[in-house]
Amino acid sequence: MKNKRIATIGDAMVVFNPSKTGPLRFVPSFERAVGGAELNFAIGITRLDMEARWISCIGDDEFGKVIYNFARGEGIDVSHVMRTPHIPTSIYFKEIREDGAGKSFYYRKPSPLLELTADRLDESVLDDVDLLHISGVYLAVCEHNVDVALKLIQLAKTKNIPVSFDPNLRLKLWTIEDARTAYEKLYPFVNLLLTGQDEFELLFKGRTIQDVQQQYHIDEMIIKKGEQGASVYTATEQYDREAFSIRAIDTVGAGDAFDSAYVYSYLNGDDIPERLRLANGAGALVATIKGDNEGLPSLQELKQFIGDEKLIER
Image (cartoon, rainbow, N blue to C red; front, top):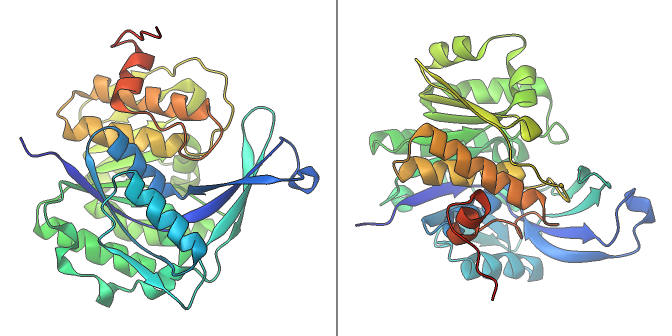
């Protein structure tokens, strides 16, 4: 049986994780890592034993080599990753509080993605792909990225490839009005909408989930609620699943982990309650480990965490 393959497009950055919690001005040192919402998603997919193709442009510099080699090491298909000598690879610094929440400080303007324009997309980019995943972070980084995403989505539709979309709202990168305008162009083509509860309320201003779903004919509205779990709304049913009880260390990347596990389970043919169980488990696991993607679980680790497999330590 052919293994499923997911394609996603987006930025990647070198991440500097703080050596201690608290305001960034009091942090004396940092540890280098790799992150970015779309790359995190792709890593989550490959660790769950499905294939991921990452479409991007990074700097042709030392940090770009770090990201490229890291992605290859995770088993990600990087055949559609461009490199530019004109714009340096993006970086960001993380600030983490005692409760695991935090802030991000980006240095990504200009972004190498400026050179990945719609006319430079090869139509083979979606060959043998079973699902296309788009993140709102990618849309926010460069103005033309919406056009690139729409070209990819139209190509996906001609090939009958479903589309998942996480608004992944980043108000440090653009305004809520700009985000709403951009997202409105995508919603009619989305099969799976994966959004946080707070994001949904900001984006749709008092509208109900059912109203949004009916307007855009979205197959599944997946609402992530953090400590309160998650819910899925179809045209006829609602499914709810409580979160796993954990002590959060670093919540960055938890939403990307949820997305990757949900999409994995969706393509695996699981029913919605099982998709929610796996996705909640993946999101919880990532939040227990410091870093953007260090906690993204293998399929075995995820099954052990949610109780499907017994962990044998000795």
